[in-house]
Length: 302
Image 1 (tube, helix red, strand yellow):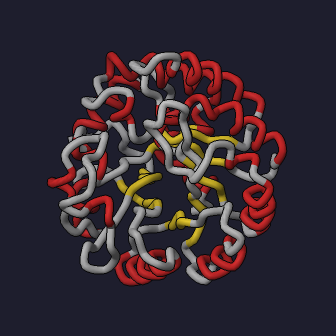
Image 2 (cartoon, rainbow, N blue to C red):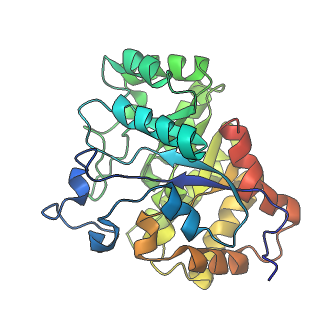
Image 3 (cartoon, rainbow, N blue to C red):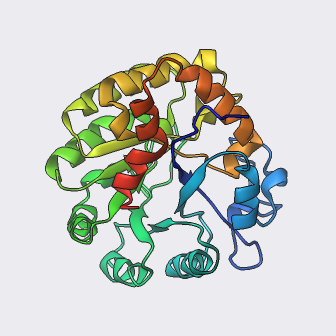
């Protein structure tokens, strides 16, 4: 049966692999606190290239981008080295986004060691912080304007790497300021900038923050992690928000990511694509090609 994305060399712009015996993965441990996204028991198992390819069976998957999985290694470069070995032996992932805390004085040295893996294309650093205490990945608020953080960005940009972050909608003005200060740096906001419409003020912050990003062409947003908007990925719920994003930024600044295996807890891959077909109905083929292939190929130099 023909698929609605036939003719597009699909790139999964955001996924994870893990091998539970290799690194601590403390967040996946049986005694770890519950996750906001749901029951972790179904993903508390190894997830490797063969599993990912099985999930994408019937879809035209051509490349993938692995984003650091909070593996808990004493040295985050160990995860990147392992992923490079996987890439060399299986072809997957195609590109790697590695973990570095850019507020750490050792960040430049760590980036240099990550760069020994040729598939490295980006750095994800902890910046999320909200007043309510729901999302606090950073050590403190305001890291996007921290002097140590900003000085490390020069190296990220000089090496042709992108900066990846999870932010909350209230941080979008900080992202705008960062993008204006570093116009040559590509900034990729993970998981739809964590829109949570049921939280007070969240939707207004998100809509105005996304609209303000029109003026900074170096910021892209991932169409991924949509469980925060609606766990079931219902097209009727998601469509107005996706339409707003596309009308503000254009398809060439939006890229799809499965967020597997995490997203599968709420929305298996087949359902993701069923809902996305409905959400994106009426979009021209060029826009679909950008969202599902070309934007990621440009950002990650695939």
